[in-house]
Image (cartoon, rainbow, N blue to C red):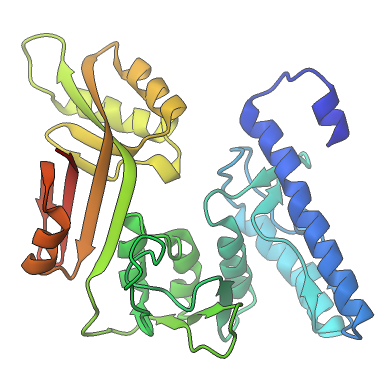
Length: 324
């Protein structure tokens, strides 16, 4: 890390970010491993970068499942048989050239799900600073209520709309092998938390996601034509190339798209699209999503707001709005 910071940068920011950020995982797990050993709990510390192989998409790397599966069987399983407790890291991996990578948003949870899948775990527990998965962010809504039980598909839907729960990429390895996920509170381990499984869960409360600092991009052709397949294909390619997963479109309509307002990413996208399209940028917006909504709650949460866009299905309503 000292060497990286000392020399003049010659590679992209994301590369240096991954090389430096990974050290936090390594330091903290080494401390935990030493503490457990001092407490009489024998364990083996492993560098997960020797296990999880990825591509070189720094800050959002994809796992090489073939190599990683082999390493889990050859390294992790024998270590568990010998020590019963293995301490390793989440969130990080490495390329085939031994360059550190990170796995993107919620990468630590994802790592746990990868190990659960490859080890055929009976269950996976993830520990958070809230009592369980809630129907809304308790920092925004003090009256948010805990949810005892959710299906995999419901959690994927919640995360898609921006709820800070469990990322869909964490759910998929568990869903593929029907491994239940327990979300527990490390502040009070006696609380039941939330169990996420493959069943159907009825009578869920309205699930509210309110995102501030949203930006709406309106795309229009520079000539007299309508936006067609060529334009749409070009835009979705730009969305994939310029906007990382946390800032992928949260809402798309007529060709208007709504993103988290990450200024550098938005500017890069707008400049890339400007060769084909005119772009109007509208900032300082809020995006409200309510799953299992009712009209009374929707009216209450949109009162006094200017509605710019609205999309609705049987289960879910989304409203893009701002203060008058």
